[in-house]
Amino acid sequence: MIDQTPSGYRDRMHQILDQLLEASSQRDMQRRFEEVSGEIEENASAALEVLEDGLLDATAVLTLPGKYRRRLRTTNMLERFIEEIRRREKPVRIFPNIGSVERLVGALCAETHEEWSTGRRYLTMDAFFEWKATHQTRELEAEEPTEPAPLAV
Image (cartoon, rainbow, N blue to C red):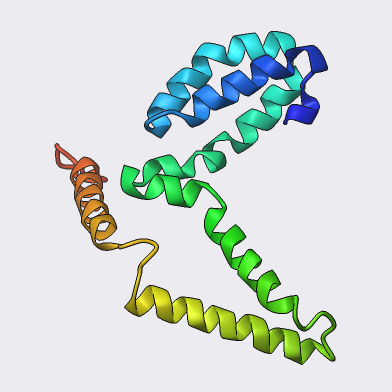
């Protein structure tokens, strides 16, 4: 999206994106987006199209409880995992075949899974399941019709 933004407007676009991504919910993000969309259209209409297409996907993490947002909105977990693969790969330098690479990465995946299952957990899901249950209840209540539907004749 920044590539679609004129160079003189990029600093302001960064500020706008920071404001949008700091929203507390998707509604708040949508409200903020509506406030600045006119300005963006005047200065970077091509970037506005890209932003409109990907904004809900980029802010999907805002629908989750705040406890999980920080860890899920970043790639830190994945970066740490890749760093550990590289650390273990350096002594080998050149792998004899693809199977040896698969064994190394597979062993690291199994080790990480075991660590998260039994020991230190990156995310505990108890609060998420409680949050999900309350949201499903609210959605069901909102879907219930208040008046009986008319019968088709």
